[in-house]
Amino acid sequence: MSRRWGTLTLCAALLLLATGCERPPSAAGFAVAYEEPDAAARDDARFLRERGIAEAAAAALNGYVDLPYRVTVLALSCGGEGSGYDPATRRIELCYEDLTEERELFEAAGRGPADEEAAAVMTETVYHEAGHALAAARGLRFDGDRAEEDAADRFAALMLIREGPDGERKLRIAAEAYDLTAAEPADPGPDEHAPPAARAAAHRCLLHGAAPQRHPDLAARTRGCAPAWPEARDAWTRDLAPLLK
Image (tube, rainbow, N blue to C red; front, side, top):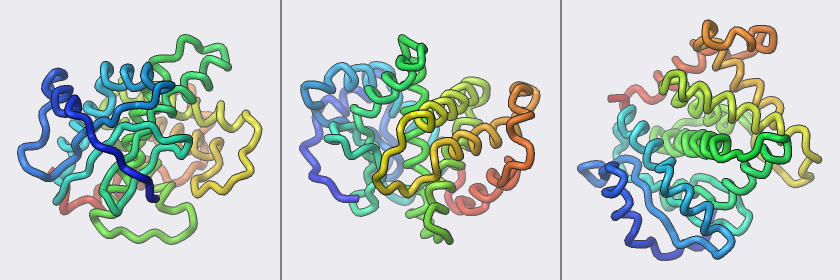
């Protein structure tokens, strides 16, 4: 995906110091930067920075893998294009507007205020796009139109499950967000991802498989799902083996 890139703000570096999240010691690894938001996105940009959502995700990724080059998680106003990974610039584009959309999604379902829900979904988004970045770094090839998107979803689930109960909570929230999206009128435009209901089901499948004792209520909703948790975990562990710390 291509997009015009603006000038990065100096406060990106200052923020990393203020939040106690240091950049990797070398030029490699996941790092965070910010562009100035459009006027309508200023509150969401402030929320993203104050919560340190991208910084926390980048730190977790850097603690798990050793990238051979820098991938920047760039927060910016996207003009409705949505978050994504740009392999040409090695940038994860994290859209301020996505926070608004996720918050409104939950609040419309009676879950307001939905700051925690929006933050959880943004964390899942960073990990999903990081899955694309790591697939590119390893030169992975996927068979099928949605295979890489499905694999990126499984990587996001893997990273959240690695965080323990708090990450599992975020993964459940991300699944709920997909359920809520599935209940809305369908977007007629093309989408390389699986249908939202299928993405929700896949997250719940992996979550229950990884921690059934903490999520017994999901048992009836995850029978026969594939791939099972050990398969999904082992596939990514095998593919990332040269990069794992």
